[in-house]
Amino acid sequence: MHAVIDGVVFLYIGIPAVLLLGRAYIGLWREALPEWILQLPVAAVPGLLLLLLHYSKGLILFIEPADSLFLRQEQAGCAV
Image 1: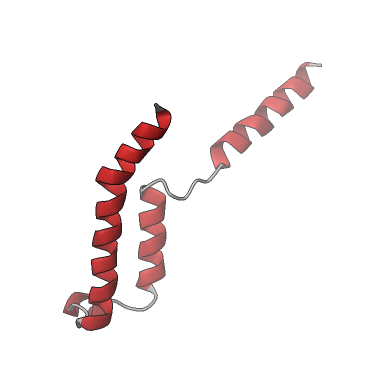
Image 2: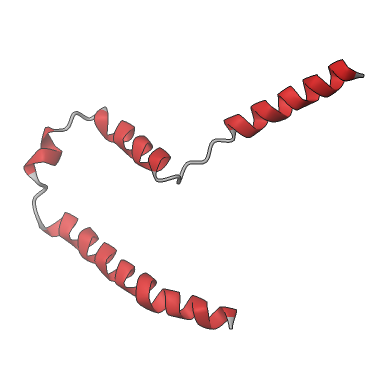
């Protein structure tokens, strides 16, 4: 049953996504870029991509769990 659900997800989400991304890729080669993209400073592009990654939860930083683990180890060491 699990394989059937994965096939349905691929059918309704995967195939349209591949088609839309393929159309966007071909459009980048054949059509001119929009004017607002040409107005962006070069240094803003990596920053915007990093913000997009961070807020879409595609970039996972384990800062908080590591800090809490360190604090728990220190508390256990002081209690002994």
